Length: 176
Image (cartoon, rainbow, N blue to C red):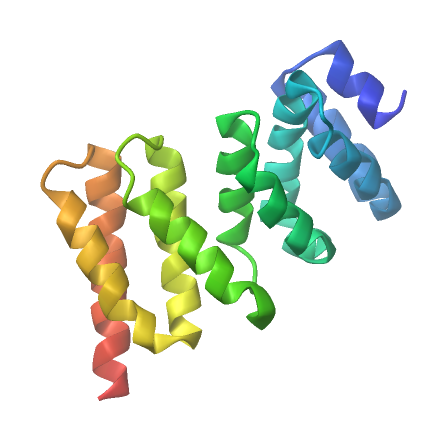
């Protein structure tokens, strides 16, 4: 059974684990999963997002060659799962310098949009904070954005926001 067949047959933790096991046995099969993730069909993209997210956390280097496509894919995402799992993986990656500005802007906009699901917003905080370690001039802008949403944010937003603010302040104190 190939990856596409597994995705079509079921959307479950068992299927996701089966796909991950196949790819971990042969990392060359990752491209097959990414083809499903970038598919035009709504359901295929949604179902491929879960194993992409899990593999991106465990093996973020697998996604490096797909950075441009991942960014493009966000602009026309067919389901929140695509956005959520893309941003989730970026938390664990060293974002290549060529993409840092664009990814920071994307994630910064997610943080500031209260209509965006909380998971995407909190993952975006971490991505922006990680990028700001290399681009310290972005720390203040990020801190102000987080603070602006803390009062009315969900428990998850407040929790991640406070942790991120603490980390940003700690980084600032090391610079001085």
